[in-house]
Amino acid sequence: MAKHGKKYREASKRYDKQTPYPAPEALELVKTLAPANFDETVEAVFNLGIDPKKADQLVRGTVSLPHGTGKDVRVAVFASADKEKEATEAGAAVVGGKELVEKIQAGGDIDFDVAIATPDMMAEVGKLGRVLGPRGLMPNPKAGTVTQDVGKAVAEFKAGRIEYRNDRYGNVHVPVGKVSFGVDQLAANLATVSAEVLRAKPAASKGRYLKRMSVSSTMGPGVKVDVGHLEEFAQSVS
Image (spheres, rainbow, N blue to C red):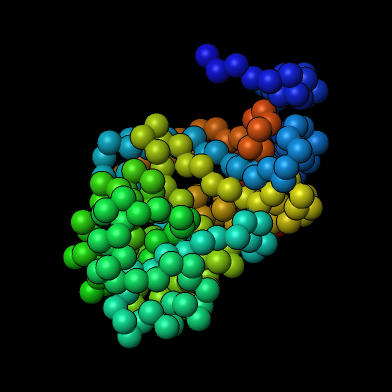
C-alpha cells in the first residue's frame, strides 16, 4: 500500500471520503485540499462499465477543453518536407520526417506530449510502436492525430484539445485544468469532458455505463462525484 505524506493525510481528514459530492462542490474541495507548493493538475477519473479486453467496448477519442489544460503542450509532428513549415508555424515543438523517426529509434529524447503524423508518414512512424505506444503517444486516426491538416491539429492540441482512452481496468483519466483555475473554469472543463465520455458509450456496453467518478489534484486525495446528476450537470454548464 502506498504511503502518503503528512499534508495528504491531513487533507484526507477534512472531508467525508465516502460521500459523493455535486461536481462543483467536489472541485471546490479539490482546490482547498491540494497540498503541494506548485500548481497541481486537477484530474477526473471515470470508472466505466465496459470490458477493456473487448475491442468493441473501448472508449477513446479527443475533446477540446474550453479553458485549456493550463499546461504548455509540446507537440511533435512527423511529416514530409512540404508539411514541416505548416507544422512549425502552428507551434509544433518537434518537426521532422524519416530522420526524426530514426533519431527516436536510436534512443533520442522524447520531449513532447502529443505526436501527430500525416497519413503518408505512418509506415515510418509505425516502427516506433514499441517506443511511443506504452507512453500513449502513438498517432491514431481515431484520436485525430493522423491527419493531413497538421497546422489545425497542432493549434487545437496546444489550445486545449486532449486525448482520452480507457486503461486496462476500464477507467478513463482526464486532466481538467489546474488548481489555480477558478471553480467555474474547472466546472466548464469537467462538464465538457463528462458530456464527451457519456457520448462515447460503446453500443456493446451493457448494464450501468458510468459506475463511479472522482476528482483530485496531483498530490491530493480523491473526492467522489455524484454521478446521478452528472448528465444534467454536463448539459447545464457546458
